[in-house]
Length: 447
Image (tube, rainbow, N blue to C red; front, side):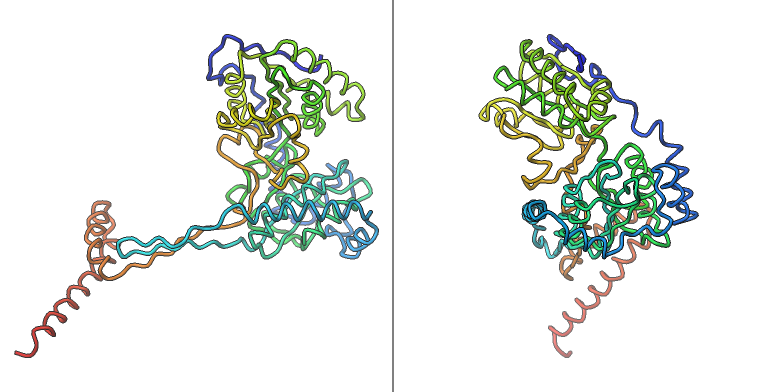
């Protein structure tokens, strides 16, 4: 049986202490990643080339950047159906991010006006997994919000295949998304190159995009050197909440969908129906046995494939909130799913009903598929245009407002032992007082 059973029937929430936890992120790769970061920072391209040869077994010594003519050829040779699918997906993603929200207007109160300024970062670095796999959809998902935000230039890093090239579908996606530069590097060395800058890779201001444990740890260590968008998107996760009427084959395949991304992920089935638990587990075993990615599925399910039995829907959502999964599938009738949505506190994305698989969100629904993992959905959200923006407030004060509120500021500054803060207001108040005296004299007229 691929999924272990965790029986929480009769156990009231909260469930924090009752749930198994994966090892702390990065605990086994910290030193390796730290060494890579140090070497790339010190040696630049030479270290990137060396680690790519050592870790990816690919020689990229003849150049890290993918030549523009190679991208052009990939586009000209692209299957028209693939190109159209990428275009439609990107247009829909752009449309969604453009409607995320607009900055609030000026706030005017008591003579003080606060304006909200939004500024895009100048340069963004995107990461899409590659090497043995290809994820052109991730290129679209990361580029769309950066484009909507108004980022000046966008760079993309993708691990190369064994022949040193980036697959054509990924290059097509990069062209459709208007990415300015594509680099054939992956792993922690790619994150370091974008954060610090090398001879070939100019430094960026924000890095976005999912990756393996080494990529996630590199972003974690470099947070502060560079902006890291959308928490730390790592190995894929799903929690399927299945009610008595959930089609077993749908629930099973949705568990497998995320597990096929490979090891270190998470696939939980939460149900209050014993018959469903057995039926879905059997269907998972059947799918795994027949899959071309059986090894990846078995590796994930062996460590994080779990059937969790609970007393009812409310307890099922309490389990889901404690896990804070990347994907939450509410495999119940639509009406019940909408009701349960009110109980969702922690999830990267929620999919309601039997006809809403996470795969729709992964590709073409519009919202981003770069989602918070490893319980960061407790405080983080899907990638959005705002991850590529800075927010600045601008303050204007009228003389009347300074006169009315300035003395309070003087008091506060002096209380904190900051005389210059107090003096910056006091001097202005003195000028205002002098002006008031002159105005009063003018009003009295000559004596």
